[in-house]
Image 1 (cartoon, one colour):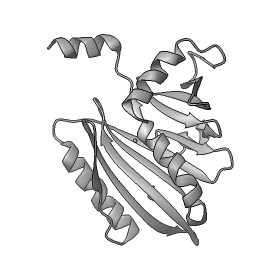
Image 2 (cartoon, rainbow, N blue to C red; image 1 turned 120 degrees about the vertical axis):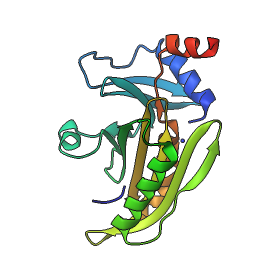
Image 3 (cartoon, rainbow, N blue to C red; image 1 turned 60 degrees about the vertical axis):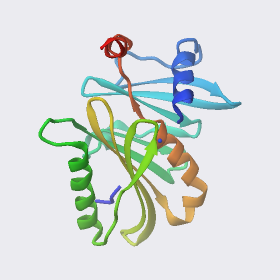
Length: 202
């Protein structure tokens, strides 16, 4: 198996904007919802995947889309997206937080598994961004004779330990890096407003 952070202000703005958007798609029976927003003169799509009864959010550029569900359901991934050219991909793997496993322990186990899979020393580097617990690895790998560049994030949300893995061919990485990082940085767990208010009162 090939091993495979939007600013808070931007996310807040998007959450406010989507309520007023008319040219979006909202299907309550769908496994995800999509809303079109316009920010800094560019078109973005807010994607709300519903996974295991919880909602998360990605902000996608216009040229990105959700991967076919049949592909995702036949894999170990919880969610997958790709650009329209099919040259850059991001997958999301979620694990519900457990008291017996701290985030640092989860990060260490993921790092060990990555090193074993890649047969080389790859280490996560801590990224300090607001109050997020976020670690990142950046490396190249070869899979089925092709050379890929991988961005691997592990982060902690309120209820989940999250792995975000983005990759593209080495030859496309310079053109794809900014979009990959922007999308992966935008990932967030959607916390109900009532719960947020309750936490502030405590």
